[in-house]
Image (cartoon, rainbow, N blue to C red; front, side, top):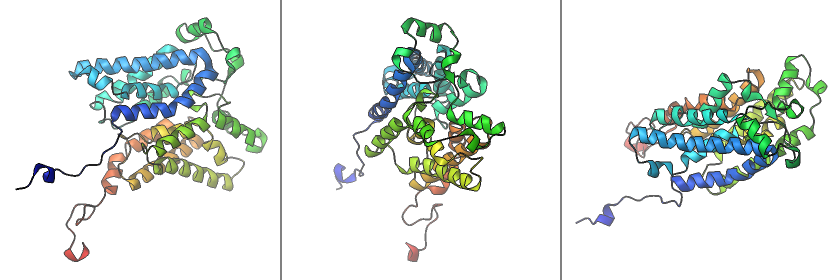
Length: 355
């Protein structure tokens, strides 16, 4: 008679469950986040707190309305991470309601409309980013340059900026590097006239330029992403595909016309590219399952980022690129699923001589 142990199938065991994975991702994201909060001051801290708290509360409300246990699902860290990722895509001095609205869009439209954790087709944070950018283009493109904490607003002034609608002082607001370059190219200037230099790319890479909270330090985002890969939480093939395809297209375009197309280093040095490659595109739920599928998916994202940045109406195309490729994932999974032993990829039996 077959014993119970002999009947049990072999399973792959891992120390990471849902909550531990979420904690690990947030830990790897923490250095870049702390860098942004430090350089953007109290308004960024308040916006970050409002966004994350709104995501947690919205998650609990959705669970209550759907009749599921709140503590079991709300304590897994997924809502906290979603709110965190949404906050990283926002202008750091945006009013509080931008963060709250973004969290609601991410949790309700991006996640629970599809059935909750693990069932969403689109990345919730990118859904929120895209909706906010289209609906509120002025608020979502008002940037602040990083500054020393001593030069930033105090706690009381920050309350007025975040909760009281105090306008951002013109003296410290500015455009991101890519948006500034694109606007000058559209005005008829060439890259040699604009005067891009390695120092500009270096400032982008280390977070000394205006941008969202997630663009403050591509360097720290890269380190955090590599830590995720070393922990085997993500597969490095996907970030390599995103960044490699982006660099390849930008490099080819720059070689063809160096006066009109930005060199690849300026695309790669942006924090949004690193943020997307390591923390957004690698989302378990919305990415393909196989290595080949991940490579196709990553190349699609990188290519679309370059196309939207170069010819699109928005200087930053990460959210739209990710959402467009999210929609392609079911098709990618269908054509890249692994072959079952003895069968073709479509499931038909192989002839005996080919097995």
